[in-house]
Structures are given as C-alpha cells and as structure tokens.
Image (tube, rainbow, N blue to C red; front, side):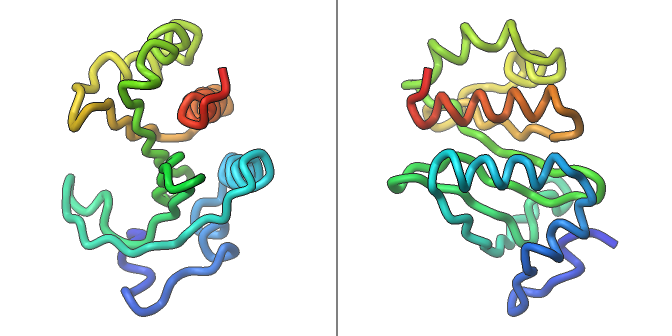
Length: 145
C-alpha cells in the first residue's frame, strides 16, 4: 500500500506510525539531528499534489527555522525522500561541496535544473552517505559552512 493511501486528510499519522512505515534508522537519525541541532519542531502537513504519479500526495513532514524551509520529508516504504532547495545564497558553497558527495547526490545535483531561483533536490535517502549529504545541504541552508 502506498503512503498516501494509508492516512486520509483528516487523520495525520503519528511519529511512531511514520517510523513504522519507513522502517529505516536513517529517518530517526535525521529527525533527531534536525530537532536537536536546529531546535526545530516538525510540522506534519497534507499535500494533494499529484505530480509524478502521486509521489508528493499524502502527509509530509516539514522542518523550518525562522520561517525558512530546511527540508520537507516524504515517507516511503524502506526509505524517505528529502526535498531540499539549494537557493542562490547557497549555490557557491553547494558547488564546492558536491564533488565530495555520494555519486547519487552529485548526479542528482548536476541533472536538476534551476527552478524559481534554486535547485529543488528530491533526494532518496537510502544510505548513510546520502544522509550525510542531506545533512550537509541542510547546514548550508542554515548558514553553517
């Protein structure tokens, strides 16, 4: 069953239900790091977007600091997608960081076109190395070099 089929608009999933669906320790690690390092509280929101055969439809988890989006996470069975916008302010640092990243991240970054002033990276977090890249890109969003 797909994530968006499990919980209707009126029934947001709990943190435990999200973790149980994803079944990946990478989820808990990123969630805990975001909450502790940046003192943010995640917000669970429902999206009706049907782009890419329902990829974005359903409940997602947004992390913001001082009104600025750090990332949005989309649960999937066995992994999750982290959407991070690399804006113009982060572009120079991101260009320097990307050669040090996992080949998956490098390819995604180079293939992603600039849209609305930034690169909207939808990263499938399936390994420790990709998680490390996600954390690095989020640090750029916050302004940590």
